[in-house]
Length: 197
Image (cartoon, rainbow, N blue to C red; front, side):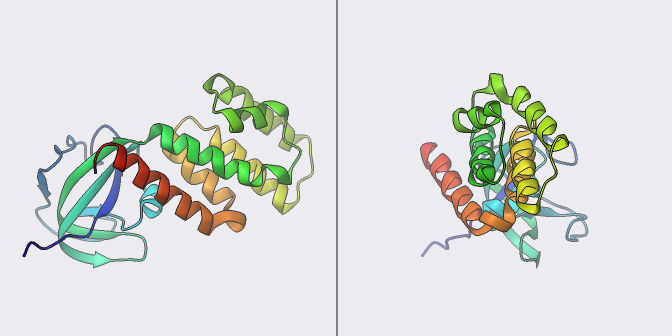
């Protein structure tokens, strides 16, 4: 009987953090030397939302691990990691960031361009939405709800999709954290299903 390995998630940019190229799908990457959480070894997260907070870029890899040395609530470190599938998550991350901002936009009087960008995802409006959100916050005295909503909107309009997704969810966290976590997981599952993984 073949053993089924647990799936983990790991984000990268165009290269690994140490500058090496990303291994091909199906190729084991092995770490030689000491394994220490957040210092050395091959890291991943059991939940894609947890992996998002460590994302240095928009490539999301579904991975399996061997020789796990240490586990924490949101990540593990192992000696070996193999990519089983990869997606460019840029559009998924932007859509997720906009969803999180929309979930709290009702808490402040958002400028029309902000609402339009969040609802449509029209990239031509992103810079204008960023600027309008900044202008609005400077012109108003915010309560905690308005501040969280503004932060989520500004985050959704950030240039880096991975940072926008995480920051928007974090800014809206007190309102929608559990829902955001499950929405992201569902979106990731759907994206990997489209590539047969």
